[in-house]
Length: 280
Image (tube, rainbow, N blue to C red):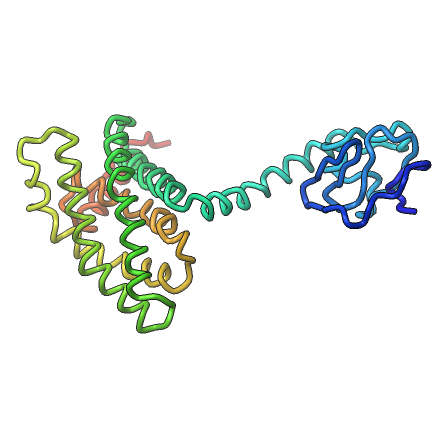
């Protein structure tokens, strides 16, 4: 007889489904260990995992009245918390498989918007949430969707991870995709900010920003095209776009599109903060 089953009950059918999360079947449950755990049983027993009652059996079903010594509450809470923390990645993976477009768009938009908030912090400014909302609006409505469609088109036109396919996709991305993304950012932000000449920033900063991007994005996309699954490529671009957003948002507001201007202002801020600190 199965040690997890009480006395006087018919054995559970072996053909019944088992799950890793627990499946309620009438007055019986399958715990994380896959063993049968009866709710409200008068007799105790150990689960197949070797514990008196595993954390999932304890959470999903009531322990037996005569189950013997109970596990400490602190261990139960810690086990439940670790199980919940470990479950976020499978949930995110399922969302990416079932709804790849909105999942990638939301991840991309959130990460790039956080990059704008970071660059404001690095400059020592007060948080300008209106500006961050403008960035989030532009990124979610255009850049995230453009990246998702564009990367999908590249994969369909040049499928596979062979070296020649990866290099061809990389070349197309930097020659066609990157200029469109940079131009849309400067023009879109000028429109959202209500500037009179919406093409002024584009004319002044496009080439500097594009050349700066050539020192960063080819390495990102090389990894993206060769290692990252197709359904995660837009999200991966958003992860790397977090750092890029701190630069391009700064360039749109205060810089000229070069890394030198960003490093110069950050260095000046750090030096002034050091000199302004009181000496002991």
